[in-house]
Amino acid sequence: MRKNIFVVIVTYNGAQWLEKCIQSLEASLYPINILVVDNHSTDTSVSVVKSFSKVQLIESDGNLGFGKANNIGIRKAIKQGADYVFLLNQDTWIYPDTIQNLVAVAEQNPKYGIVSPMHFSADEVTLDSNFDTYYNRKTNTLSSLVDQVPFVNAAAWMLSSKVIEKVGDFEPLFEHYGEDRNYSDRVRFHGFKTVVVKNAKICHDRFISRSFSKDVKQAKFKMLAEVLNVNHAWIPSYFYAFKNVVGLPKYFSKYYSFSQVCSMFFSLFGYYILLKLRFITILKARKSYR
Image (cartoon, rainbow, N blue to C red; front, side, top):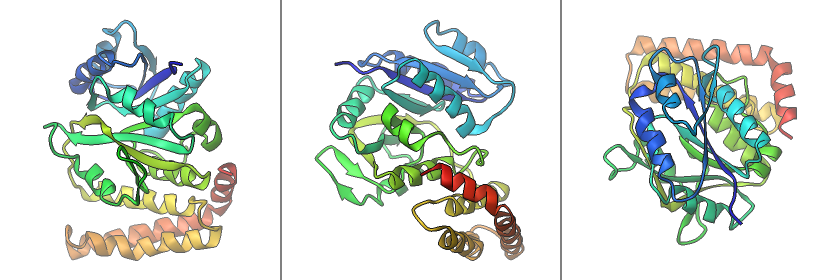
Protein backbone atom coordinates (compact mmCIF):
# COMPACT_ATOMS: atom_id res chain seq x y z
CA MET A 1 0.00 0.00 0.00
CA ARG A 2 1.32 3.43 -0.93
CA LYS A 3 2.46 5.50 2.03
CA ASN A 4 1.55 9.14 2.64
CA ILE A 5 4.85 11.05 2.44
CA PHE A 6 5.31 14.67 3.46
CA VAL A 7 8.51 16.52 2.63
CA VAL A 8 9.13 19.36 5.10
CA ILE A 9 11.53 22.11 4.10
CA VAL A 10 12.51 24.97 6.41
CA THR A 11 13.51 28.02 4.38
CA TYR A 12 15.39 31.17 5.23
CA ASN A 13 16.73 33.38 2.44
CA GLY A 14 17.14 30.35 0.23
CA ALA A 15 15.77 31.71 -3.04
CA GLN A 16 18.90 30.72 -4.96
CA TRP A 17 18.25 27.01 -4.25
CA LEU A 18 14.52 26.62 -3.84
CA GLU A 19 13.42 26.32 -7.44
CA LYS A 20 15.84 23.46 -8.13
CA CYS A 21 14.98 21.79 -4.80
CA ILE A 22 11.22 21.86 -5.35
CA GLN A 23 11.46 20.91 -9.02
CA SER A 24 13.46 17.84 -8.04
CA LEU A 25 10.77 16.89 -5.53
CA GLU A 26 8.03 17.30 -8.11
CA ALA A 27 9.94 14.86 -10.34
CA SER A 28 9.86 12.17 -7.63
CA LEU A 29 8.69 8.78 -8.85
CA TYR A 30 7.02 8.25 -5.48
CA PRO A 31 4.05 10.60 -4.88
CA ILE A 32 4.74 13.16 -2.15
CA ASN A 33 3.32 16.23 -0.47
CA ILE A 34 5.56 19.26 -0.05
CA LEU A 35 5.28 21.54 2.96
CA VAL A 36 7.51 24.62 3.38
CA VAL A 37 7.95 26.57 6.62
CA ASP A 38 9.54 29.94 5.92
CA ASN A 39 11.50 31.55 8.74
CA HIS A 40 10.61 35.13 7.77
CA SER A 41 12.92 35.35 4.76
CA THR A 42 13.92 38.78 3.52
CA ASP A 43 14.74 37.65 -0.03
CA THR A 44 12.35 36.24 -2.64
CA SER A 45 12.06 32.79 -1.02
CA VAL A 46 8.33 33.14 -0.34
CA SER A 47 7.51 34.20 -3.89
CA VAL A 48 9.56 31.30 -5.28
CA VAL A 49 7.64 28.84 -3.11
CA LYS A 50 4.31 30.41 -4.04
CA SER A 51 5.11 29.87 -7.72
CA PHE A 52 4.60 26.15 -7.08
CA SER A 53 0.85 25.79 -6.72
CA LYS A 54 0.88 22.37 -5.04
CA VAL A 55 3.31 23.35 -2.26
CA GLN A 56 1.86 24.19 1.15
CA LEU A 57 3.50 27.26 2.67
CA ILE A 58 3.56 28.33 6.31
CA GLU A 59 5.03 31.79 6.88
CA SER A 60 6.55 32.48 10.29
CA ASP A 61 6.52 35.95 11.82
CA GLY A 62 10.19 35.56 12.80
CA ASN A 63 13.21 33.33 12.43
CA LEU A 64 12.40 30.34 14.64
CA GLY A 65 15.55 28.43 13.81
CA PHE A 66 15.82 24.94 12.38
CA GLY A 67 14.22 22.82 15.09
CA LYS A 68 11.21 24.93 16.02
CA ALA A 69 10.29 25.58 12.39
CA ASN A 70 10.58 21.87 11.59
CA ASN A 71 8.32 21.11 14.56
CA ILE A 72 5.61 23.24 12.95
CA GLY A 73 5.97 21.43 9.65
CA ILE A 74 6.10 17.99 11.24
CA ARG A 75 2.95 18.59 13.31
CA LYS A 76 1.13 19.90 10.23
CA ALA A 77 2.18 16.81 8.26
CA ILE A 78 1.11 14.41 11.03
CA LYS A 79 -2.24 16.19 11.32
CA GLN A 80 -2.76 15.58 7.59
CA GLY A 81 -2.09 11.87 7.94
CA ALA A 82 1.59 11.54 7.13
CA ASP A 83 3.02 8.03 7.39
CA TYR A 84 6.52 9.42 6.90
CA VAL A 85 8.01 12.90 7.14
CA PHE A 86 11.11 13.62 5.07
CA LEU A 87 13.04 16.58 6.45
CA LEU A 88 15.04 18.22 3.68
CA ASN A 89 17.34 21.25 3.65
CA GLN A 90 16.54 24.09 1.28
CA ASP A 91 19.97 23.90 -0.41
CA THR A 92 19.56 20.31 -1.61
CA TRP A 93 17.99 18.41 -4.43
CA ILE A 94 16.90 14.81 -4.77
CA TYR A 95 16.71 12.26 -7.61
CA PRO A 96 13.56 10.66 -9.00
CA ASP A 97 14.09 7.39 -7.11
CA THR A 98 15.34 8.90 -3.82
CA ILE A 99 12.03 8.84 -1.95
CA GLN A 100 10.90 5.42 -3.16
CA ASN A 101 14.24 3.85 -2.17
CA LEU A 102 14.08 5.41 1.29
CA VAL A 103 10.50 4.24 1.82
CA ALA A 104 11.37 0.73 0.68
CA VAL A 105 14.11 0.46 3.30
CA ALA A 106 12.07 2.16 6.04
CA GLU A 107 9.28 -0.35 5.49
CA GLN A 108 11.70 -3.26 5.94
CA ASN A 109 12.31 -2.67 9.63
CA PRO A 110 10.24 -0.65 12.14
CA LYS A 111 13.42 -0.15 14.20
CA TYR A 112 14.91 2.09 11.52
CA GLY A 113 14.35 5.42 13.26
CA ILE A 114 16.28 7.90 11.12
CA VAL A 115 16.58 6.85 7.48
CA SER A 116 19.01 8.96 5.47
CA PRO A 117 20.14 8.92 1.86
CA MET A 118 23.75 9.37 0.78
CA HIS A 119 24.66 13.08 0.81
CA PHE A 120 26.71 14.24 -2.16
CA SER A 121 28.14 17.68 -2.79
CA ALA A 122 26.93 19.93 -5.61
CA ASP A 123 29.22 18.23 -8.14
CA GLU A 124 27.07 15.09 -7.71
CA VAL A 125 30.24 12.97 -7.44
CA THR A 126 32.02 13.61 -4.14
CA LEU A 127 30.40 13.07 -0.78
CA ASP A 128 29.43 16.12 1.26
CA SER A 129 32.37 16.65 3.62
CA ASN A 130 30.35 16.58 6.85
CA PHE A 131 28.36 13.56 5.72
CA ASP A 132 31.58 11.79 4.73
CA THR A 133 32.85 12.21 8.30
CA TYR A 134 29.71 10.72 9.80
CA TYR A 135 29.43 7.93 7.23
CA ASN A 136 33.01 6.83 7.89
CA ARG A 137 31.97 6.20 11.50
CA LYS A 138 29.42 3.56 10.48
CA THR A 139 29.11 0.84 13.06
CA ASN A 140 27.34 -1.94 11.20
CA THR A 141 26.42 -3.14 7.70
CA LEU A 142 22.82 -4.27 8.04
CA SER A 143 22.35 -5.32 4.40
CA SER A 144 23.80 -4.70 0.97
CA LEU A 145 21.86 -1.42 0.88
CA VAL A 146 21.85 -0.30 4.51
CA ASP A 147 24.61 0.87 6.85
CA GLN A 148 24.08 1.81 10.48
CA VAL A 149 25.73 5.00 11.73
CA PRO A 150 25.79 6.62 15.18
CA PHE A 151 24.75 9.98 13.71
CA VAL A 152 24.02 11.74 10.43
CA ASN A 153 23.21 15.43 10.04
CA ALA A 154 19.57 16.31 9.45
CA ALA A 155 19.93 17.67 5.91
CA ALA A 156 17.81 14.73 4.75
CA TRP A 157 16.03 12.61 7.35
CA MET A 158 13.08 10.32 6.81
CA LEU A 159 11.11 9.69 10.01
CA SER A 160 8.04 7.52 10.37
CA SER A 161 5.01 8.89 12.19
CA LYS A 162 5.46 6.11 14.75
CA VAL A 163 9.03 7.22 15.48
CA ILE A 164 7.90 10.85 15.78
CA GLU A 165 5.11 9.81 18.16
CA LYS A 166 7.62 7.97 20.35
CA VAL A 167 10.59 10.37 20.20
CA GLY A 168 8.69 13.66 20.00
CA ASP A 169 9.63 17.05 18.56
CA PHE A 170 12.96 18.77 18.23
CA GLU A 171 14.08 20.21 21.57
CA PRO A 172 13.20 23.96 21.66
CA LEU A 173 16.18 24.75 23.94
CA PHE A 174 18.35 24.65 20.80
CA GLU A 175 18.38 27.69 18.54
CA HIS A 176 20.07 26.45 15.38
CA TYR A 177 22.86 23.97 16.06
CA GLY A 178 22.67 20.71 17.98
CA GLU A 179 18.97 19.90 17.53
CA ASP A 180 19.72 16.97 15.26
CA ARG A 181 22.35 15.59 17.64
CA ASN A 182 19.86 15.71 20.51
CA TYR A 183 17.14 14.09 18.42
CA SER A 184 19.51 11.35 17.28
CA ASP A 185 20.42 10.62 20.91
CA ARG A 186 16.74 10.27 21.75
CA VAL A 187 16.13 8.01 18.76
CA ARG A 188 18.87 5.72 20.09
CA PHE A 189 17.46 5.90 23.64
CA HIS A 190 14.13 4.56 22.39
CA GLY A 191 15.79 1.62 20.68
CA PHE A 192 15.71 2.86 17.09
CA LYS A 193 18.60 2.83 14.62
CA THR A 194 20.03 5.55 12.41
CA VAL A 195 20.72 4.18 8.96
CA VAL A 196 22.04 5.30 5.58
CA VAL A 197 20.49 3.90 2.39
CA LYS A 198 23.18 3.41 -0.22
CA ASN A 199 20.94 3.47 -3.30
CA ALA A 200 19.22 6.74 -2.28
CA LYS A 201 20.96 10.03 -3.02
CA ILE A 202 20.66 13.76 -2.46
CA CYS A 203 23.00 16.60 -3.37
CA HIS A 204 23.81 19.31 -0.84
CA ASP A 205 24.86 22.55 -2.50
CA ARG A 206 26.77 24.34 0.24
CA PHE A 207 30.14 25.79 1.07
CA ILE A 208 31.23 25.05 4.63
CA SER A 209 33.09 28.00 6.09
CA ARG A 210 34.74 28.34 9.48
CA SER A 211 34.32 31.32 11.80
CA PHE A 212 35.28 31.73 15.44
CA SER A 213 31.85 32.89 16.60
CA LYS A 214 30.14 30.01 14.78
CA ASP A 215 32.50 27.45 16.28
CA VAL A 216 31.96 28.82 19.79
CA LYS A 217 28.19 28.69 19.32
CA GLN A 218 28.30 25.15 17.98
CA ALA A 219 30.56 24.12 20.86
CA LYS A 220 28.05 25.46 23.37
CA PHE A 221 25.18 23.58 21.80
CA LYS A 222 27.31 20.43 21.72
CA MET A 223 27.61 20.82 25.50
CA LEU A 224 23.85 21.32 25.78
CA ALA A 225 23.36 18.12 23.79
CA GLU A 226 25.66 16.32 26.23
CA VAL A 227 23.71 17.31 29.36
CA LEU A 228 20.44 16.41 27.61
CA ASN A 229 21.68 13.00 26.42
CA VAL A 230 19.37 10.55 28.20
CA ASN A 231 21.57 7.64 27.17
CA HIS A 232 23.68 8.73 30.15
CA ALA A 233 22.61 9.38 33.73
CA TRP A 234 22.23 13.00 34.74
CA ILE A 235 25.50 13.47 36.68
CA PRO A 236 27.73 11.71 34.10
CA SER A 237 26.12 13.81 31.35
CA TYR A 238 27.45 16.95 33.06
CA PHE A 239 30.88 15.34 33.24
CA TYR A 240 30.81 14.69 29.49
CA ALA A 241 29.77 18.30 28.91
CA PHE A 242 32.66 19.55 31.06
CA LYS A 243 35.14 17.50 29.02
CA ASN A 244 34.21 19.72 26.08
CA VAL A 245 35.26 22.82 28.02
CA VAL A 246 38.83 21.59 27.73
CA GLY A 247 38.64 19.31 24.72
CA LEU A 248 37.04 21.63 22.20
CA PRO A 249 39.44 24.57 22.67
CA LYS A 250 42.29 22.07 22.36
CA TYR A 251 40.81 20.77 19.10
CA PHE A 252 40.30 24.27 17.68
CA SER A 253 43.85 25.32 18.57
CA LYS A 254 44.90 24.22 15.07
CA TYR A 255 42.57 26.83 13.56
CA TYR A 256 42.79 29.80 15.92
CA SER A 257 45.33 31.87 17.82
CA PHE A 258 46.25 31.23 21.44
CA SER A 259 44.23 34.24 22.59
CA GLN A 260 41.15 33.00 20.70
CA VAL A 261 41.53 29.52 22.16
CA CYS A 262 41.72 31.02 25.65
CA SER A 263 38.64 33.11 24.88
CA MET A 264 36.81 29.98 23.77
CA PHE A 265 37.80 28.15 26.95
CA PHE A 266 36.43 30.88 29.23
CA SER A 267 33.28 31.22 27.11
CA LEU A 268 32.62 27.49 27.35
CA PHE A 269 33.43 27.40 31.04
CA GLY A 270 30.93 30.19 31.63
CA TYR A 271 28.34 28.32 29.58
CA TYR A 272 28.99 25.18 31.64
CA ILE A 273 28.25 27.13 34.84
CA LEU A 274 25.03 28.36 33.22
CA LEU A 275 24.06 24.77 32.41
CA LYS A 276 24.66 23.85 36.05
CA LEU A 277 22.42 26.71 37.18
CA ARG A 278 19.70 25.60 34.75
CA PHE A 279 19.66 22.04 36.08
CA ILE A 280 15.90 22.13 36.74
CA THR A 281 15.18 23.04 33.11
CA ILE A 282 17.62 20.35 31.98
CA LEU A 283 16.02 17.72 34.20
CA LYS A 284 12.52 18.59 32.95
CA ALA A 285 13.66 18.25 29.36
CA ARG A 286 15.38 14.93 30.04
CA LYS A 287 12.27 13.62 31.79
CA SER A 288 10.09 14.56 28.80
CA TYR A 289 12.18 12.35 26.50
CA ARG A 290 11.34 9.15 28.35
